[in-house]
Length: 420
Image 1 (cartoon, rainbow, N blue to C red):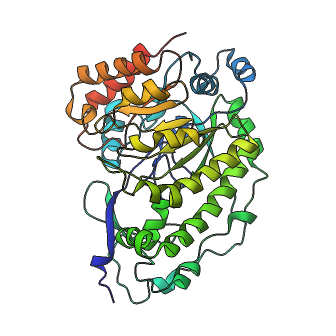
Image 2 (spheres, rainbow, N blue to C red):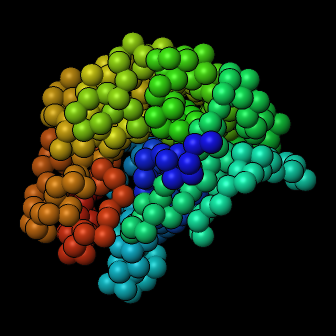
Image 3 (cartoon, rainbow, N blue to C red):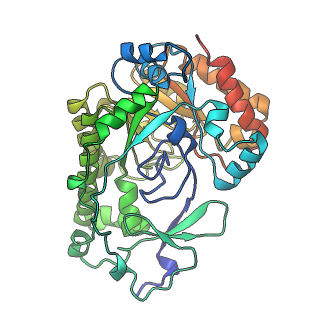
């Protein structure tokens, strides 16, 4: 049998994020449904839109909380909002120090993050949890190991916020092993509560957001990183089988959120490195993009005004045109270290809303507060004067980010992003 340690997949971050929910956010692309995290941006101001703007504007009149719903609608419809919306996520260590720094654990409220309310399907009462025990029989897992909702073991790695994934199907021997792997059937999960949750979010001036899930990322976590990539070439039927099963789950969630009136529907898969796509373009189109395009099409058929948000780290310049053509509304995170953000805006700025743009490999950890302020000012001037911009760091902020730079980031958002 393959040794336990050699079966590890790539290390991943244990983090807080603000745009990927149902248990996460906005990991935005990293987190699995059972992740334990605190999401400043998701609980109090992540990403989500809805409805039309007269009702949203009406709700804002009066001395209540800021109507982030109205500003989200304006932003994503490329009209000037009253303010630029912004948010961030933090690793546990940085969050602890930030709470000490500002004197409150309400980071989102302190800095003025935009507010959203997360939607999720309800698991039927009494439904027994899936049993993954046979995949771990005889294994000795390190102390602190937890399991996500797909049966993937998450092993602490000893760093600030990284873990190792151990994949339950790493030793699969046949297509039947893939077909028989237990995944939740969400078709019978509760949806009756969703419309009321959307209405409550709007009444509070919040964006109603639904997290759909990953496909490729969840697939490789279940199968193993190297194993899944090899499957796409040597055993494509195996890869197709796992992706199709995850696609069916995601389609059900997406349709439910759209029918309920969600403003923002979050999707994502990290499909690129710093230099290029992980896949050959044709492989990406056939295995991954074709399925996301079906999910997005279903959303738009049910609720045309719902905004589709997609996350992928890395250099995805080659596929942005196809994402836009498939119906994408909001692109995250637009890493300036590996993308020509100006070029993407020149070509697609009238069709896309940008979410991100503040480098977590450059400006935030290694710049000065003046550098951070200048970058925010530049982004708003270039991309946000007529809507179409949500400011956020391009990933979770990590322990090396100076607290002064965090203060500078949100002070600059308020200074340069207030239009009312």
